[in-house]
Length: 412
Image (cartoon, rainbow, N blue to C red):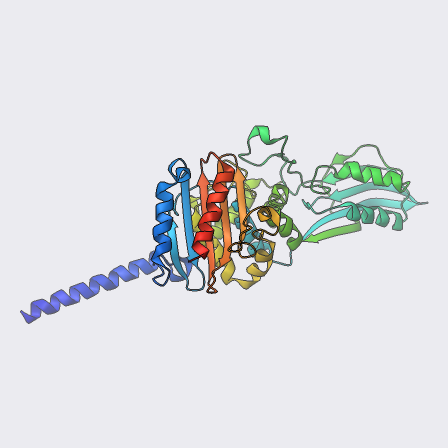
């Protein structure tokens, strides 16, 4: 009998150990969120949230996914449909930002370069001008003035040759993959040579050359910058923080696409498509977030694509990752809209419970409203959350519903 009990005990012990090893292999401890419910959090919130969802017309007529996570305690607080694959709208920009900061670094600079090839004789350039595009949405009037100043300072008053633009930084598609055809009148074209975020660069360049009395050809062509006998006349750059600020605070799609394509250009290939950029983002999901990238879809950097597909839980895992990596967090967090104060949250979250407390990225396209970010409880716990709605009928009612849920949460 004793022998039988010993064997049974050993078998049970082996079974538990084997199960543990399997779990460790499939889900590395450092890469997963704790799904255990935070026992110190009031049950009353969970009960009220469940009741709100069950009795809400919004939740009964649309797809809803919610995940709330206590970063301080490193444990889950509440979830509802959090693993559903849904359109993230502009919450996609949080993933674009994190992947770019990870692979490019916080010191990354966008660059637009001006070259010439030939000889300058008697203030005449007997040669050509080349402009190397870097898909910089921040390039502005001040930068263009510097370009023309530097041409003058190089001793050039006339260009006896051609003007070329090198736009090999990305492919020649004007809309993102999966953008609806009727958005072309609403969205600025995704071209890598921009002036104030729009496709006006060469028009403004020629206008300013006229102002400086620099003679030039009336047209331009596209060509790669030659590798030999090229002289750099001017280089203008902007930081990744400048791009992140407008991209996240104002939810600017052009800025998001420019950052997305910086990833695609990272391997120095010519005319990279969205696929090269998506490869980096999906690799980030796999290597840094520990998720199977085949479960998700990344087709652009802004969230406009109808093919984009993330889950609320993945986004919270992303926010947790950023929170735990200070070199990312210090660039990312200050650029998020602040409830009731600025960016896309300036017109909502005016109540004392939310104003200045919620820092989150909004998302909105036809029939989709999303929200994801951080907040701090009255007790001082830092929280990450994501709330996705797909198939909604009223954006305003849905945003109010989200604000009310967060206010209920922060009042407990």
